[in-house]
Image 1 (tube, rainbow, N blue to C red):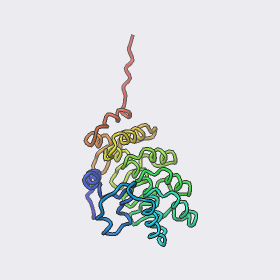
Image 2 (tube, one colour; image 1 turned 180 degrees about the vertical axis):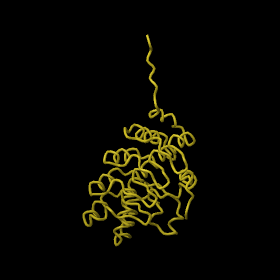
Image 3 (tube, rainbow, N blue to C red; image 1 turned 180 degrees about the horizontal axis):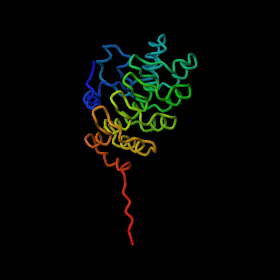
Image 4 (tube, rainbow, N blue to C red; image 1 turned 90 degrees about the vertical axis):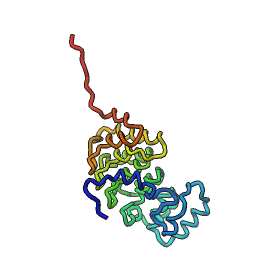
Length: 231
């Protein structure tokens, strides 16, 4: 499907964000029947359930790697990389790598393992998303900080011109605290270009102003005027 140049990706995220895969009920590797299952929290599944999933994917190492990264199966990730180190670079049909998957899920130990095994820190999906975009989309501040410390591109823009700051400003996280912390992290970065505009012409500040309670944080990057008293 083709979209016009002024297509607003953030509006689509707000209206169809529930379709973006995350957690153990991700739609990324499941069948059509699985897509119809009700989303469940990670703690609802036993270790036997996870082992069953891994057994089902044991002959599909690429799919298993992507699934394991998304579901925080650190030992499985280590085992796969020991057997075939090239799996760190695998991706699905949309270009999402294990690092994207781990960043979406907020799994910092898996992120660390993948980077230590040679994963690129800034791989791009077909839509131009980096793992930092993925972390900021769900306000995973610990992962976002870790990625920045390892060279993540702070001002990377998607095909629609969205930066990680745009996504953090959209306030789609269920946690007010982590949403604010993610914005503070990005806004405190020395080389941030906060004025970058998306293809729809919005800055991250514009997004924050209409999307949530944290627009005041953008005062951190506003130009200041120093007034010196003249005697």
